[in-house]
Each structure stands twice: as structure tokens, then as C-alpha cells.
Image (tube, rainbow, N blue to C red; front, side, top):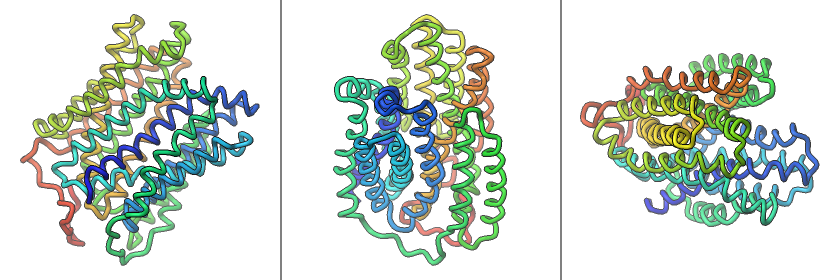
Length: 449
């Protein structure tokens, strides 16, 4: 397998999704004016996408494990690009919402594959470096998104932000389909379609419930019921959607929990900080973006340094330290009004989140055997979709008490996740080695720890 091309494809897939989300936020006001849409309709251009992508990520990862990660990546990229072009040509907001849902379906196909391809291409002890490159690229996309989106909307209109997705989708999607790589050995067990439906309903209802205004109690209740039915089903079925070796690992469970907590804290904090910067301090969007720029810079730098930190300290210490740094950043922002204090707070957020992203993702992907790498990638991506939705929903509710109390509560989220980091691997040499990419795992072997 061509490792440089695999890494470039993984980065391109992650960046196109990250950039799409950030530029859409900038484009929504212009979209609303031109299409004469209501605020609720504009909100559904985001909610429809989130529900679709979150509900299908794990099943899409299973499809990649079964039919080939490159093949699913290629289908996802081309479909994402085609849906983006359709949105750019949409005659009304109803078309935009429908095509955003389609875009979410294809986004769900490509996102787990970006991690599954890396797991198949790199040995476990060399995964941290490509994951660092991928995380740094996401940080750059997050920083560039508002600037790129603003320039495109100002110069060419809101439709241009969607056409930007088409060239990279073609450039990386077509080669992935034309040369899909070696197909995995056909599985003997059928796809767990009932499990996939139950998981999709559970996650879709959860994301809808927390993104609705106000939060939907019925959605939360339905999500809880289907989650209980899913657990019962997965324990009884012969070929579960969620392999026990993945979800039965304490380390993987802890890493996913930390990812949910820190992403909820980060995105909830950014929501509150935007309110503070623009409403309380009277800054325009560009001025707000400049003050938050240290977040992206430190996210890129911390991701680049994380592989060396993992080699020296292990995932346990690196993740615990970074989680504490992120919590400290939220605390700094809770009382900051001057530019130096704001920059310090955003820098701490970026340093903490960049390190956790690499360290926790490495645990999730490395601990999975190659045959379950797509599911592991789907779980990691699900955590990073659920966390922000929960964080923004919580921040919205907490803002009624004021930004200070809201940020204090958001700082408690990563602090509460700190005990979970004890389940993560320690320094190299103190833990049993992960399975090599080509190493078969006995059917009755123990779950990785």
C-alpha cells in the first residue's frame, strides 16, 4: 500500500469535512437572505447533516471493513462532492436541506475510512505520526474555514463555498475507486442490519434531541429506549455490529469517553466565547476570529509534538495532562476580557485538544485489529460528533445564568473525565503490544486492554 498517498487521502477526507462545516457557518446568513428561508430552515441545513452523519458512522465503518476502506472512501468522497455541487445549484432551501442530508450520508462513508486506511497502512507503533499530520491539517482547516468562507461569500456568493468541495473530491475519490486496493477476506457472518438500524436511530435521535431548540425530551427518551434494545440485541447476535474486542476494551472505552468530554467542553466553550466576544465586547466576526487564532496555532503545534510525547510518556500521561490543560484554558477564558488573557485561554484550549485528539485517537485505532479498523474509526468519529452537539446544547442552556457560570460548568467536563485516563496505556514497554496489521487474532482471544 502506498503510504504517502494513503496519508494524503486521509488528510484530504478529514479536511474537506472540517472545512465544509466551518465555511457553512459563514455562508448561512447570505443563504437565508437569498433563498428567503426561515431561521428554523437554516438551522436544519446543519441539523439534517449532523443527524445523518452521526447515525451512520459506525455502520459505514463496518462496510469499509467488509468491502474495503479505499472503496468506501472513494464512494464517500465522490458522493460528498456531487452533493456539494447539487447544493451549489439548489433552487430553494428545501433542496439545500435534502442535499445536506445526502451529503451527511456520504460524509459518514468517508470519515471512518480516513482512519481505517491509516490503520491498514501503518504498523501500530508508527500510527501516531500520521494521526498527528491528520489532526494538524484539521486544525489548519478550522482556522482557515472562516477566512476562506468569508472571502468566497463576499466575492462570489454563498454557493461558491460548496463548489470548493468538488475538485478535491474528484482528485482523491476517483483514484481510490479506480485502484481500490486488496479486498478484505469475505466475512462468514452477515451484516448486522438490525443492529445498524438500532444504532442509527439511537444516535440520530440523540443528536436531534440535543440540537433542537429547546432540547427534545421525546428524542432523548426514544434514544434511551433504542439504546437499551441495541445492547440486548448485540449481546445475543452471532455477528454484532460492535465487535466485543473493540467496545470491550477498557482503554478504547476510556479514550472515547475522553474524546466526548473534551470535544463537548471545547465546542461549548467556543459557543460561549463567541457570544462574549461579539455581544459583550462588541467585536466584529473578523476581530473575534483573530483573538481565537491561538487555538488553531497551538492545536497544530501540539499535534505535531504529540508523537514524541507519546513515545516518552505514553497515552495515559499525555492525555491526562492535555485534558487538564484544556480545562485550565476554559477557566482562563471564564474571567478573561483583555486580549492577552483571551489569547492565553485559546492557546491552552488548542494545546490540550490537539494532544488529546492524537493520543486518544491512537488508542482507539491502534487497539483495533485491521479487520475492525473501520468500526473503530466510526466510533472515534461518532464521539467527535456527539461531543460538540452535547457541548453546544449545554452551553445554550447554561448561558441563561451568564457566560461565567456556563464556562465554569464546561471546565468541569474535562476535569470529570480525568479519572478515565487511568485506563489508557502507559509508557512504551509497560503495556502488551497491540496487534500488528497483518497479525491474525484468534477467534476466542482476549479483548485488548
